[in-house]
Length: 382
Ligand code: NDP
Image 1 (cartoon, rainbow, N blue to C red):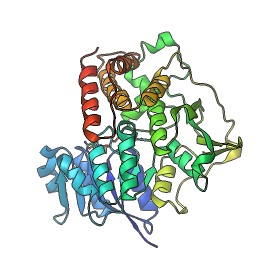
Image 2: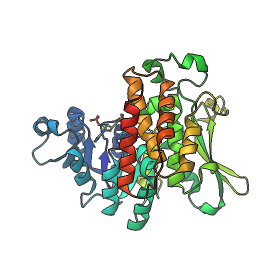
Image 3: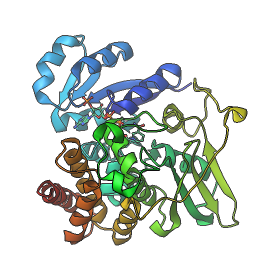
């Protein structure tokens, strides 16, 4: 069997570790050839040892010397923003899996596409900010964009063998996050620890807070718009507290296909890395008699405005989604550092969107300018 050669950006994070588990379970199908992280050199070095990779990248340049001491002498170290690009464009790499939190993966992703690599994308922020550009470049260079996010991976699975023109609606499921039943008044006083308690998934810090605020779903709606080339008005969100159905596609004849599995990111990661094949992995299949029930309810738009703000940003288009994303990223940091309350997250995003004049997002410069503007603007709010 051909072993796909994978470069993994964000290897020390939650998705990164699950990817290494998938690769370890399928050694005849997947070969990890490069690893990249921000600053966690101990974990990165341990992963390099286990996988035997000869290429690692570290974003934080001040850690290079210490990292050198932890690695075998035949391992090449790349560093800084350029290091992420260098490792993403290694000649032998076939697919780059991008699991860096935030937007630092954008330039490496574009560089990987240009050098003919397929991209498996977990970092939803990249597609929200620059989906038009990423999808256009992927088409131009003839590479595949493979969704790792569980909802988009579910939709991708449901779409296999179907024509886009028969799709009438995408239904993205949401667990409802930590505050599904919390009142509007109580939301003003919730703590970071409460926002970090996800009912069904075990994930990194930012995405867990985004799930509590429903911004994760907003980001996913815009991500879906670009991945599946569909208008925002055909993308719906339904709350499904058990997180067993990962998303659905409704076709023009009214039939709906859904993808189901236990809440384990190894499922979508494995499918993205083995596509178009399916391989027997090591994940636990669903046991229907053990599932007591599958429930559905409408999102509380009056309490959580993130979904409607995303719809607005996606409909306006241009640089507005980049502003939605960047303002949220800063507002989450403000919430973490206690400079704003939880409800302040969406207040600040709304203020940034209201103050922004959207321009075309077909070029990287305008996207990066809007991203920077939104970060600076939001950082000055409280
Ligand atoms: P984590 O916070 O667990 O991990 C983030 C990873 O990114 C770490 O490896 C970190 O390195 C690395 N990183 C951060 N900044 C840089 C940088 N500038 N250069 C290189 N590496 C960097 O995040 P998650 O794994 O939870 O999420 C990663 C992405 O996947 C996010 O975009 C998220 O939205 C998306 N996603 C996550 C899911 C999940 O289940 N966790 C589900 C679906 C999507 P270090 O450890 O050194 O700081």
